Structures are given as C-alpha cells and as structure tokens.
Image (cartoon, rainbow, N blue to C red; front, side, top):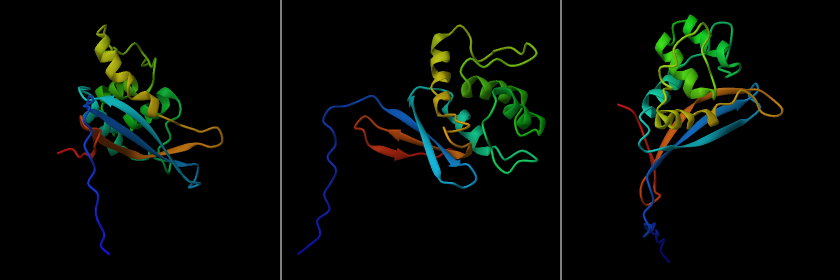
Amino acid sequence: MAIIIKEKKKRKKKTDPYYELVFNYMIGDANGDTAEEVILSADNPYIERFVTLLNRLKPTSGTWGIVFGSRNSTLEQFLHEKQITADEYLFLGQTMFDGWGPKNGDSLQYLSEDSKAYEWMGQFFEGIRGETEYSFLVFQGCDLYYYDEYGQKHETEFK
C-alpha cells in the first residue's frame, strides 16, 4: 500500500483576488484566543501601511497589553509615547474607527469626498475589537493573506 498525495484542483471559474486580514486577540488575561477577519479589496492602497503600523505597536506605559478601547484615548497614548506620528494618529483613527473624528479640529485628510478612499478605509474597522460580550480583548497582531483568482490562500510578508 502507498500514500498518494492528492493535488488540489484549481477552480475553473476565476474570481477577483482579495486579501484577508486577521486580527488576533487574547481574551481577557489569557483566558483564550479569538480572531476577527476582514476582507480587503486587492486594490486597497492602505493595506501595507495599516498592517505595519498596527504590528509595530507596543503596550503603552502602565499597561501590559494593547486594548482598543475608546476611540481617542488608545491612539492618544501611542501618540504621546511617540510610537506613532501625528499623521499616523490621523490615519489609524480614520481606518480603525467608523465615524472617528480627531479632537481640536484636526483635518480629516484621509477621508476626503473621494468615496473610493472612504470605502478602502472602511474595510479595516470591522476587525477592531476592544471587548467581547464577556471580557476585554488584548490585541496580539495581524496576519495578512492573499487569495488569488483561483481562491488559493497565500501567506504574505512586507519587505
């Protein structure tokens, strides 16, 4: 008897390529893990910037983990500790939180009247979570996967 490896058949029907962004979270204080997935269009120009910014964040002083709580306070702590710039603060706020508006009249430079830009930025915020119905969530980083026109999943990396 022999082991036969079955080849995956490529789909005959092509689909539009896309990215899947997986937000990894620890539940509470190590009470388990969970993930949120969002689908991003392949032509979204903000993917690399968003993922690299989130993945480089470190817990702020006085905390042991990253919890995406209130819209402004979380990002303001990262800004105050110089983990992000003022421009990155605006960018993250507008991609992480639907309807987010910075304090003190800062410009909403990324959300212009261009509906395509608004659509691209809106693809991210569904994965941002600060809590579940029973506990808080600690952000553990993002993973990005690419699905080609045949529906095949590919890992990605940034260089």
